[in-house]
Image (cartoon, rainbow, N blue to C red; front, side, top):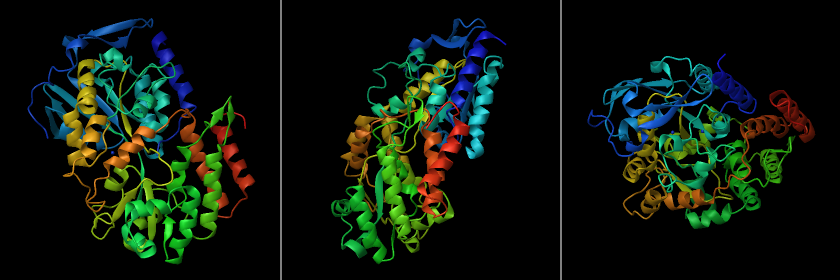
Length: 472
């Protein structure tokens, strides 16, 4: 096997030992993309030779087939609506000038997306030019799996500078920065979270749905647990499931999941266990999985759930806002900060090493993640929170912008404050596996099928199978 492919295969195989399934969403003229942002990429690094030496591809040599790998339609919809010159041909094909864009969409179910991406990347070097991956998407929970391998190009090798991405939120850059400090991707999204509360429930139980007054009821976790008692007396669960709050706790740990090769359970994770057990035992929350039918019942008034935690994409795209009779459709959710700030999800754009379309990759990255006008259009048209601080700060002060789902308020100032406070200093490549494994194991404890120590043993056994290099 050729030297470079061996390096990539070994790197990916190593990375895969610390990554598991992720949970993270108008056509114009038909001319080629505008020259803005592409002039410096005439000699862009895009491939590697058989002996591992660097090679370059000139803009004039670029291919006419552009392959994008992703797991759903979200990025495709953003490109279709906002990238200048994109024309949709059909559900899986588009055109940018004389370049054909092929969308390779594989759902996340059963790790299918990552498996397909991994297999294709392993064959990237030997693939015909028209079959090579040009651009692919990743999520935060497994970003390090890819950015710490040679499969992803440094954005600087595409000609993207620090100045180009200066207005992006720092945490979005931290997630796709390799262990040796190289930025390997960009995102059009920011995903700071907030607490969404049922306005009618707040008025019934607290006498007001004013956000400042509701915040007093959920200002910290001890107050949050006490407020659950008030809500239960009126027939409401404070959350649909313990898993609703987990990410808020886990985003605020003071130590990483793995320290010196040993699994480490942070004090804030332990507090999630204690608080959740108390709530479950009193019937004030459940233990269902996120995205399940039981979890979704609270999207409707009869579900009797007080709040959910999430970013803008959750309230806008995942809480049945388009369904008649739902709380969101009635404009019945309010928004406040909640006990702690957090983020959830996001999608990052990576350039695949070996792409024969580096100039187009660069232009997509710049247009879709740094162009302030396009960023603003995404906020207005798609209700998304975008990765551009000036655009978001301006929209947060815009009195003409409001969210119908949130009863006509402008929620962006809350999101902006959250985005600025996100700290990823304790991020590790083990996060997804440990977080999912811990929640699954603790369900046995919450449901009364195991003691805490027995549930912990289940977790450790699961981690020993996933990560045999770790101790506990």
